[in-house]
Amino acid sequence: MPKTTLPESSGAHDEDVIDALVQAAFVTMAVLNRIGAENDLSLTQLRVLGILRDRRPRMAALADHLGLEKSTMTGLIARAEQRGLVARAPSAEDGRAVDVFLTRTGARLVERLYRQVQDALAPLTDRLNAAEQQRLRTLLRRMLAPGDEH
Amino acid sequence: MPKTTLPESSGAHDEDVIDALVQAAFVTMAVLNRIGAENDLSLTQLRVLGILRDRRPRMAALADHLGLEKSTMTGLIARAEQRGLVARAPSAEDGRAVDVFLTRTGARLVERLYRQVQDALAPLTDRLNAAEQQRLRTLLRRMLAPGDEH
DNA sequence: TATTGTTATACTCTATAACTATA
DNA sequence: TATAGTTATAGAGTATAACAATA
Image 1 (tube, each protein chain N blue to C red):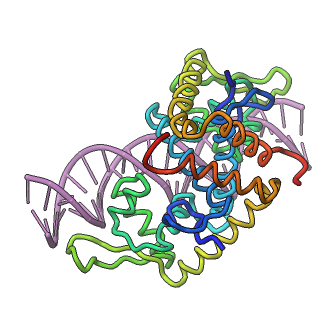
Image 2 (cartoon, rainbow over the protein chains, first blue to last red):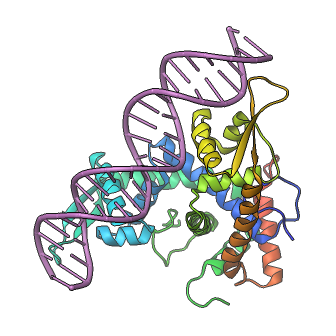
Image 3 (cartoon, rainbow over the protein chains, first blue to last red):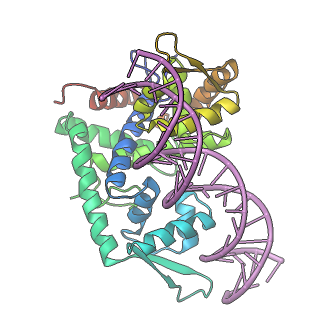
C-alpha cells in the first residue's frame, strides 16, 4: 500500500502510479501557475484563453467546458474583456446567446503563452530521451483516451 | 510543431509529450478538485492536509512549501482550525514560531480523502495493464527526479 | 415554460503593507 | 536588525439565488 497521494506527503515511500501521476500534475500546474502569474493571469484565465485559441463558444459552452457556473463566466470574461484579450458579440442564431472570442491582442498573447509553457516544461521532459518521451506520451494518451475504459 | 498545449485546445493534433503531460495534469487536478469540493475543501486546503499528514511544520515552512505568503497561510490555517481539522501550538524552540498539525478529526479525514483520490483515479490508470502502469510510474518519476537534470 | 446571460451577494484564496513579539 | 506570525485591506475566483430577455 502506498502511503502518499497528496503531493507533499514526503519522499521515500513505495509510490504507485497514481501517486506519481498526482505529483506530476502538481508540478505541471505549478509551472502553468507561475507562467500565468508572470502574465497577470490566473490558471482559469489561462484555460479560457486556451479554449478560445481555436473556438468561438457561447458563454454557456465555455462554462460547461470549464465546469464553472454561468455567473462565474460572466465575471471571468468581463475582466478579460476589460484587458482587451477577448470580446463578446451577440449570437447570430440565438438572440439570448453571446459568443466569446479572442481579440488580436489576445491571440498574440496565447501564442506567447504557448511558447512559454513549452520552454518551461521542456527541462522536465528532456530528462527522458526521445524514445522514452514517445512512450510516455503514448501511455498518457491511452490513459486519457475518451470513451471505452479498458 | 504541436498546436495544442492548453488543455482544451481541441482534439486531433500531433501532440507532443508536453501536451499530453499538461492534459493529464488538468484531468488529474479536476478529479482532486471535485473530491475537495465534495468535502468542502479547496485544492489548497487539500494540499495543506496532505503536507500535515506526516509533518508538523511551522507556518513559515508551510507557506514555503506551498509557495504562498505567510499572511495567506494565516487565513488558510485559521479556517481549517475553526473546522477542527488542524491545530496550532507555539513552538518549543522559538518563541516566535507556531507549529501546525492535524487533529484526530483531520487525520481521519486525510485518510478518507486519500482513499477517495485512489478510487477516483483508478479508472484512468486501469486503462493500462500492470506492466504499462509500472512503465508510466518509472517515466514520471525519472522526469520529476530532483537534482541532476539529464 | 425553459434557457441564456447578468446582477447581487457572500465566502475563499491570494498578495501587499503595516504591525507585534521574539531572536 | 532580522525573522515569525497576524491584521488590514483589496482584488480575483467561485457558487447560489433572483432576475430580464428570448426561445
